[in-house]
Image (cartoon, rainbow, N blue to C red):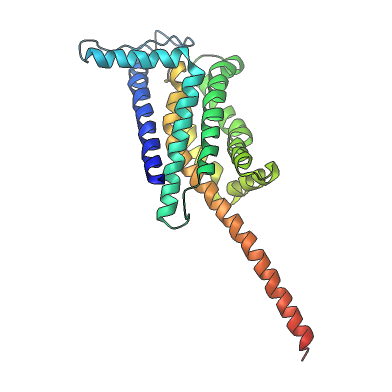
Length: 271
């Protein structure tokens, strides 16, 4: 059953990614070809220049429909894109763990947590944050200083203190453990498993592209495409941390039992 669910999720993620790429790539190319004449991106106004004579009419209509949906319903598009992507990424991570015998069976609650995180934070919240709050704080330009300020604030303030903690808090809400325990697991993955270093290695160059050459109304879709692979890493890192925590919890009572048994033996046989 889980294998069929995985195939559906991955297929949906690939479909959404393909739809987004049909819109993203022409828009990026159009933006790059006119970057000198158009230094700033107008909100939700980037056009899609496609050679109508080189593609079938049906494909052009499909691309226009997808582009219109992403422009006119940005929050719904962001939630659907990022929610499906997050679910598919976690499904792949769980499949890898089961193949390595580090996980016995599929964890649907864990997958639901990633849907919540992907659709809620990476989709709806980031749509508002990057396309409405960031232009107010840092400006709407794509010059080097503006891009640098946006990337620095995103990577060194939002990522360690909001983005990643929200992922762990989402899992705590699904699995029923406390927010304090969620933050403890997050800090453990940062200190022991190098979570932030892995994150910065991927996202610093990606966000430089996001705020410089990707049209505004497609930024969340572009981020969703990259974060599909990032969420596989995040899912595996957090799962490894949870496994270590469970092993520690299982080991502690055994050590106490052995210690108590040793003390009882010493008391019964002092010589």
